[in-house]
Amino acid sequence: MDDRQITSAGWIGKAAYMKTAIVTGASSGIGRSITEMLVRQEFTVFGFARRFKSATGSDDCFQPVECDVTDLRLLEARVKTVLENQDGLDLLVNNAGVGVFGPHEELNTLDLKAMLETNFVAPILLTRLCLRALKKRRGMIVQIGSTSALKASPIGSAYAASKAGSGHFSLSLFEEVRKSGVRVVTINPDMTETPFYDQASFGTHEDADSRLLPHEVAKAVETVLLQREGSVISELTIKPQRVQIKKK
Ligand SMILES: NC(=O)c1ccc[n+]([C@@H]2O[C@H](COP(=O)([O-])OP(=O)(O)OC[C@H]3O[C@@H](n4cnc5c(N)ncnc54)[C@H](OP(=O)(O)O)[C@@H]3O)[C@@H](O)[C@H]2O)c1
Image (cartoon, rainbow, N blue to C red; front, side):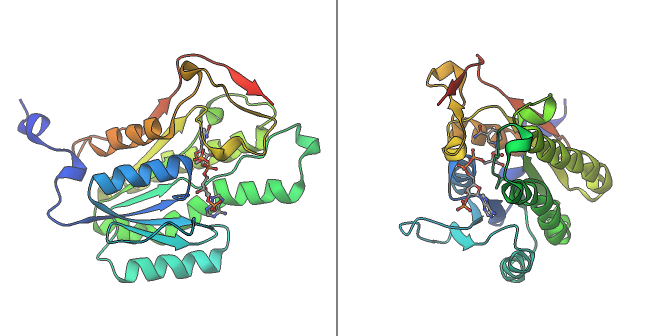
């Protein structure tokens, strides 16, 4: 039997140094839960978002970075500042995202553009900015996708397309970088109780079996991180037991 299968604490348990992560959308919902999990796993997390509550302090483990990921010049400057003080990067979590839902012809064009830039363009550009540093540490890229990327999703066609596009980017990039030791993973959550649906005409159902909680998605990310080096969960889908949505 391969010793590593029984003794390895997984990729995150093996480093003799403090691991570093960038998590986008760290101010809320799934991104905040992933950040909390990573801090428990002794990562230093640079959390990107446009706004953090004034109570959000920084410490050695968590550094809030105010950044609109659709502002390329700002994104480049922020990433440069983070990386110039690090000897590589262990983990990039492309989580920041927005949802614009409704019949396609009724959607606001600027809202649609902002969604496509946030969900599809920004993760690709941010990955490009981080890839050299990730290769240096044989690091990991986690893309937060969506189950809507896996099926026809009317009333959310463009959202689903943005998630399917970033999922395909991850699939292709993994083939490109796997020889360098970098892992690229897509996590596809189903409907999760967060502020994500605040502006939508529907939301998660109150029945506990019909929605996920953010920490359950973070647990899925942790499972991926805990795989031993050399074994990659490249895609993971997490769903509630039942299908119900709440119309507002
Ligand atoms: N909730 C669900 O049912 C569900 C299901 C499947 C997939 N997802 C995906 O999960 C991810 C997280 O969503 P969530 O449910 O946790 O929603 P959320 O609570 O609304 O969090 C979204 C996060 O993204 C950040 N963000 C949005 N636009 C940004 C921008 N331009 N620049 C920087 N940060 C930005 C937000 O911070 P600021 O507003 O402060 O910038 C916030 O931290 C998204 O990619 C979403 O598509 C969610």
